[in-house]
Each structure stands twice: as structure tokens, then as C-alpha cells.
Image (cartoon, rainbow, N blue to C red):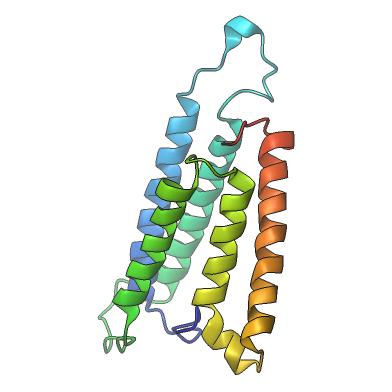
Length: 175
């Protein structure tokens, strides 16, 4: 199964509206959680370096994007009568369970249990791309070896960027 299971434009406006409400609520919760973090005024921290600034900005961005999605859904008639239901994609629930299982394996098993963060991230991203994008890659005529090499390259690049960003920009010590 490829990552592209639904054709473009196949999502109903009502589904977009429901998603917009979820994203807006999530962004609002992130913003409020970041706002309530300790500002460390007693340490005389620069106001642009306070803990929670980046999550606050990300939460605000998610709220704005959620509201934009809601506005688009309303313009497309999300509150009107619903049309014919979209056809079910065979194996979609199994596919989603596999994706959630892979993410749980990464966050619960790999990270923080003996292997370095960069290696756990490299393994996760490479395996995720190799297994979940193989249908599209095969459609492009790429061999399994070529697919594996591409997955490893993307995994290595992602691991390097994420590790360096957290350690050197955000000063987060990684496991």
C-alpha cells in the first residue's frame, strides 16, 4: 500500500471541517500549555529565549492553519447536505494500525533505551520509508536495493538534521 491512498480532492468538506476543529483545539492546547510554562524571570532570561516560546508559536500557527481549513470547508459547503459517502480504502485500518504501531515502537522502545537518539531516528525513518512507501517506489520502477538505499539516505539526513537542530539550536540533551 502506498502513502497516497486517496486521490487529491477526494476528502469531503465535512471531513475537512471536523479535522479543522481537531487541529484548532490541538493548537490552542499547545499554545495554552506553552503560555503556562515557567518563564524563569528569576534567572533574568532574555524574553526571546524563554522556555515555551517555540511551542507557543507552533501552537499559534496550528490554530491559524486550522481556522483556514475550517473557512475553506465552510466555503465548500461543509454544513450542507452530505453527498454520497466516500469509498472505503481496503486495508486502511490495518495500515493505520501499522503506522501507529511503528510510531509507538520508536517512541517507547527505541528512544531512551540504550541506543543513541540519532541511531534510533535513522532506523525508524529508514524503516518507515522503506515499508510504507514501497508501493509508490515500485511503481516508479525502483528495485528493492534502490528503495533501501534511498530510505537509508533519507533516514540518515533526517536523523542528522533533527539531532543537530535539537542539540545545537535548542540545546536539548538527547538520549
